[in-house]
Length: 388
Ligand SMILES: [Zn+2]
Ligand SMILES: [Zn+2]
Image (cartoon, rainbow, N blue to C red):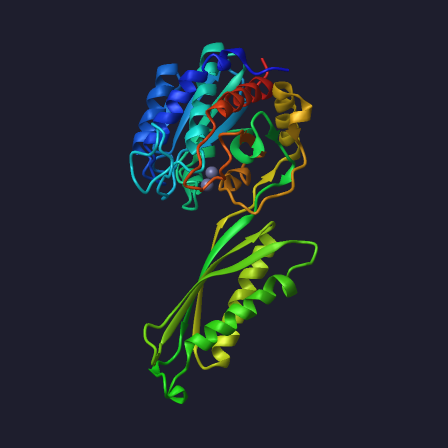
């Protein structure tokens, strides 16, 4: 039981890469500098680089021997539109953009594993290092898949890691089955008839329709989803009107839905649509729903989760590996890759006394001490799955 010595020796280098990425955050599909950084490092290690897979995405290929077995390791590269609160030297150089989800750390860890594997070469087959753009809700995983990711770079198994600020440094989570939620966004447009606020009989009031809809939508989870399943429907935006004495002609609602199965998501999409249709029609108004499922649930393959848990156990001891964490209501677009190839989405402990903020918080920072754990995991999963 121990971390990889060669990777432990890279701690300072991993920290320098991670802080450089942190200081230069780029939003989804705009990761040009980041992709250049990754490509240059991979090439310097002797890893073959393929650019432009899913716009700013790239894949590094490392092969040893003629075996056809292969494994894919995925890191995400994008930052978030958040103004960073931190004041340390590596704070974001671009106000309003920030690596607040730790994708800077994920990228650095995967580069560390690539460097180690390119030097040690204790595996047989092909490793595909997948550097994905635009994970934060704008379709980077799908873009790579549509560009032929798995046709060009076939993978027998896939692994990805996300730092978990709620989990102490030095711990891992590898759970079989569903681990993150499916996520959707919706907009509801209501068209009525505007009138003077003092003459409601001349209007079809979209505000009343919107209010009724907000209440009615609360019944979707409680009345339409099986009680043993769980789901969330949150109306997070209500927009209508500009004046005290004018009944507006339109109102809009928007919000988000989370479920742990696509079936539940389909039920909710249908019920939202039926309620909008019925309630607007009942009031003589018109309704239109734009419902977009952005993320599918991440479902880990049982065998891959066992291998991932065993590798983590070798690194940090079984006591530090969570093998049956309850699913979280966050979402992750690695789900789309796992629908194509079996694999496991692993959680990596990030917290210590200096790292207590959650992801997507303006004071968050990836814990540089976690990078050697993550890179050791990626290296050892390759040496395990692609055994010599
Ligand atoms: Zn995020
Ligand atoms: Zn993230």
